[in-house]
Amino acid sequence: MVCLEASGRAESARLAALLAELDERNVDNVARTESYLELYALTRAHPPDLPWLLMAHLVSRNAGSLMTEIAVILDRGDGAIAPYALRELFLFLERANHLIFFDAWYHVLYHLLGRSVELRPGRCSRFVREAWSRHEQARRAGQPHPALERALVRDLVTNEQNLIERRVVHHPRFPIARALVALAEALGQEAPVVLPCTQASIQVGGFAILERRIAAGLSIFDAMADRATRDAMYAWARRHPHDGSRSLWGGPARPRLRDAWPAHAVRALWDGIHAPPEPDPGWP
Image (tube, rainbow, N blue to C red):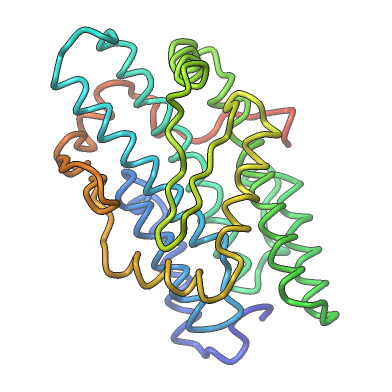
């Protein structure tokens, strides 16, 4: 096995069970967010840990908070933004959140199981298959761990952002959502990615631009690259289970995401919201 070499059969069985639970763990933002943290905890218990998983947990927390804010604005009904536009913005966020989890849960678990050579073309990109091969070869060669961490994070962020580039960010299904995001950026109202236990407040500064999203992902990693900071973030996340409310971050009290957007209500908005990713010749 490439990872968890000494973990034994029980840990391998647990990882295989997690892989089989992909669909139920991808039902909504809350399930995804907590699943990333659970898997990160397993990598901490069986080093080396994969900081991308903690990053994914924290970014998914931020997305869930935005989804809850959209529900609050809809309930307020002040007419500033049309309800159909807000619903499209929610679907835009949910679709990206869903597709990234659908992809990452599969290839990360195959890596942890020592089976990344079995990753199937068509199920995940050629880029990420090659990224895991590079990472595993470099690890076996004894390359310094900090350099390996950052290189892997760069590759996984590059993959996830290309994954959603044409399927969500520039998909014809979401023109109003793109316009709302661009308007918020133009007005200086872009919501930053808030990270616990640090003063970092990271903005993309052009969500429609692929390279800026990738750069923002690397900035998130840089904010948590220090081991003490990462440990503090992890401890905070364990103490504060995700429910979509910004009150956990020191913001105003908000409803729980599952109360505001139950999964059946989300599917009623668009029956394709949780469909598998469409083929993308630009990211095969």
